[in-house]
Image 1: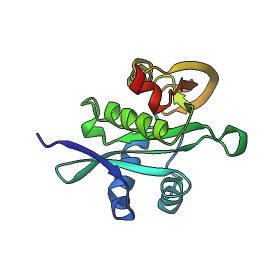
Image 2 (image 1 turned 135 degrees about the horizontal axis):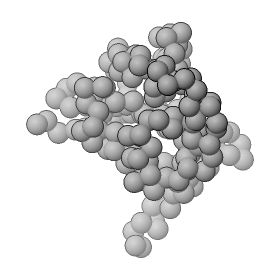
Image 3 (image 1 turned 90 degrees about the vertical axis):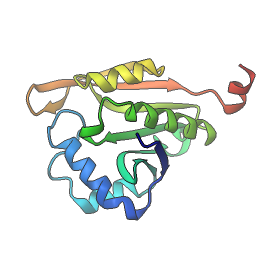
Length: 171
């Protein structure tokens, strides 16, 4: 099996990223975007203010994330991120590697925490992964997500404090 490599995304990755994104949102069960989210908006969203990275295996992009400040100004010390893994590669540790990579990048960039603003409660794989990686559910948005099959379901706000890199060296 080829080694998984995570690297900064380039505009040359746009087609592969768009394909993954469309496949992930198509079931209507994991991300708050719908079929009206067009390619131009996607490009602005993923190549705008937040830095995007891709997971590559065997020369193929199989996952991605974007990371940046959750808010400007007095909230800029808390990061936020969005992740997507090609459906055929889900359940193989790609998502975990992307989250771990983003945590290291967030720490290195000086963020004091990372917050996920909108985790669909029925996306059990993501919720469990985030919990295993130290995130807590700090808020519930009742009925905030219109799930394609289940109707209105809750969305979670999840948070994890980040220690600065020098604290890791002392542990």
